[in-house]
Structures are given as C-alpha cells and as structure tokens.
Image (cartoon, rainbow, N blue to C red; front, side, top):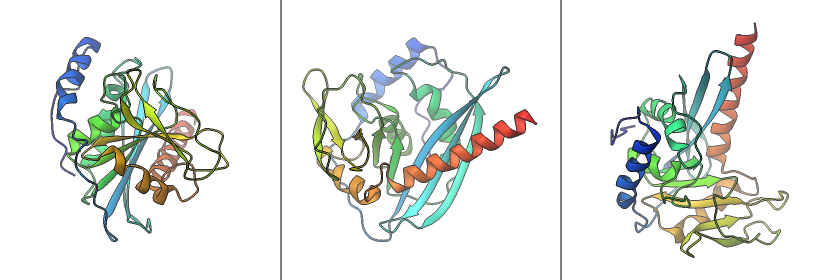
Length: 236
C-alpha cells in the first residue's frame, strides 16, 4: 500500500497535538462508501510486549475479500515503542508500527477496519482517522471503549444502535450492539472518506453476530500470536 508521509513521527507531545490540529480539517466524512462483491477490505490491530529493556509494538494487517471474508494477504511488523503513553495521543504510539505493516501490503483494499476511534475523539482525529489520511483510503474506526462521548446502551438485540455524541452534542458515530451476547457495544465512527450514515451496515455485515468485524478480529488474533511467540522467545 502507498502510505503518505504527512509528518515526522519523532515528536514531542506538544508537536503531536499540533499535527492533529493541522490534519483534522483534511478528514472527509462526506464521501459515500461503495462496496461491491469481490472488493478487498483490510483489518488492522496492534499489541505490545513489555520487558525490562523495552516495549515492543506488534502490528498485523489482514486483507480479506468482501463480503465472504476469504483471507488474501497477511502482513505484520514489530518495532520498539518510542512515544509515551498519553491519552488522546495514542496514535503516535501505535501508528508507526502499523504504517510499517501496511507498507508491506501488496493488495489495494477499498476499506480499512481499524481498531480505535475515527472522528469520535476529543480532537476529532483518532487513530482510524489518522490512518485513513495516511493511506488515503476509506476507513472506519471500531473501539471497545468510548472517549468522553455521550451515548446510551443500545437494546440487547443484535444490530441495535444508539448515537455517539461529543460533549457539545455533535454526532460522531454509533454505539452498535454487534453481539447480543456481549454486555457492551462497540463504538464505531468514520475515519476518513466515509459518511457517518454509511458506517453501520458494513460493520453488521462484517460482524455477523460476532463482537468485532472479521478483518479486525483476524488482525487481533495475528498480533496476539506474534506477541505470544515473542514473549516465549524472550523467556527462553
């Protein structure tokens, strides 16, 4: 995949916030999402392994067909973490290794399912929105927890939704009951080149009663495997 270089990654927290402020105006939430049978979609996720020496980040990118979710390509990367843990700036801790994994992807997906928030972020640019800008590809953010958003629990029925709002009342996404068996919904918002009204249908197709969309779950399983193997190797 072609990943644009929009800024440096060696930044202070103050510089990182400025990057967010500079990029947020470039996010497109007006383009309709067009998915056809046979298109390729991508799921990404990452994980960490902490040792006394350093913290290593792992990333996985899984390409699948739409809407039958046959695996087409699996790519991954690992790198030392250099940015501190700061709420609201996790993008700068997590995205560098994801970028390395995406640079290895040979396919051309038309949609990215990204772990984390899109525009449902205090500054309007979570990791999914930032990633969408870098890849210039339609991206949807799927998070397991809200970020200072206003929301109500959807009905305990698969496919139920409620609006996800910022503190000022701006509609930024949905809480979606992807699985009726789970206590909490997932929190879904546009990342880039996707309208808010277009995020629910692909999520419900890709979850099909499971908690996470299949491409994202596959990426989660892959980084979990990579982390486990690295941990075993470090302990041996």
